[in-house]
Amino acid sequence: MTSQEIWTVLLALGLAAAVAFASTPLVKALSVKVGAVDVPKDGRRMHDHPIPRMGGLAIFFGFLTAMLLFVPLDGEKRGMLLGAVVIVVLGIFDDIYALPAKPKFLVQIGAALIAVLSGNKIEVLSNPNIFSPDPFWELGVLSIPFTVIWIVAITNAVNLIDGLDGLACGVSTISAATMLVIALLVSEVDVAVMMAALAGACMGFLPYNFNPAKIFMGDTGATFLGFIMATVSVEGMFKQSAIISFVVPFLMLGLPIFDVCFAVVRRVSHGQSPMKPDRGHVHHRLIDMGFSQKQAVGVLYVISAILGLSAVVLTAANAVKAMVFLLAMGAAAVIAWRVFLPNGPHSGQTPEEGPEEVPAPEEAPAPEEAPAPEEAPAPEEAPAPAEGKEEDSHG
Image (tube, rainbow, N blue to C red):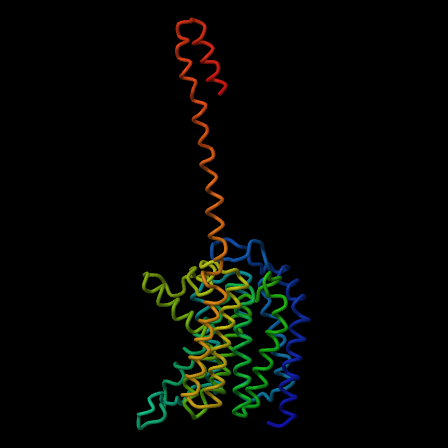
């Protein structure tokens, strides 16, 4: 890439970050005014007071501004932006009125179709079976439903991990940065600029979203981020001719993909609807293990970064080197876990609890006050019994 293209990428990132950062306070005031406020009312919520939740609108403003200024808009990109507008409008209404799941799902399919029919389709996949005589899979008529499923799935996957302060926005930043680096490596300038704009918009919003969050991005932001990353991966990553076209998108978006797959399997196995919310997501499990919100988010950031680095290495090297790198990073993560958290996140608290309960036996002297029965010989005197009853009544 030329130096001018590098500067374009950096300017797109900086402008998107500045616009998102500057517009977030305005979006926060608007959220309060229109009633887009998240009130904690069940065990799934991690906050204890109402917080505005339409912050994704600021991310959209930052991304859109950079896109319009630095990316030439062809038919595919116009279709992506139009679908994104539909997703954002749907998210705004959902943040205000809490729409049912099925109507939202249908609108998401419609938005995905807008992008797909504009040319954002997965038409060819590299065959992961290296021993097969056919290096590619031609999807043919299946390209439209396959791509729609991909876009809708990633859109909801990012939304599902939006359960802790800064989690979904931070993971999306890491994924967008991964796609940015890969696009630079394979000389996909437009994809690089779009991912720089998306990463910049997330970075501009994150200062308001870190724990303790001042504003949530809500469905407006989470579904928008998922939709853009899914669509751009179709335009950039899946159209590469190498094996990376099959593996890389799954590595870049590995955490939300795993979480949504696990959620669907968990709910179906319990006879529940796949769309029914619950408290079994990865971040909920970390909280239940005793991690604080910041610790849980940090763990998931590290996992996303490992997967992202593996995707970059796989793109720049071969599959063997990428697997060695992934195993090395996994081993390093396990070692770090054992060193810094040898007995769990609150390992230092357990020994202190025992000694505090030991003093309880000191209350045993109470039985020493029972010698009252020894005065039993007094029954020979008539007044004695009356005095005993009075003492009992005061005691």
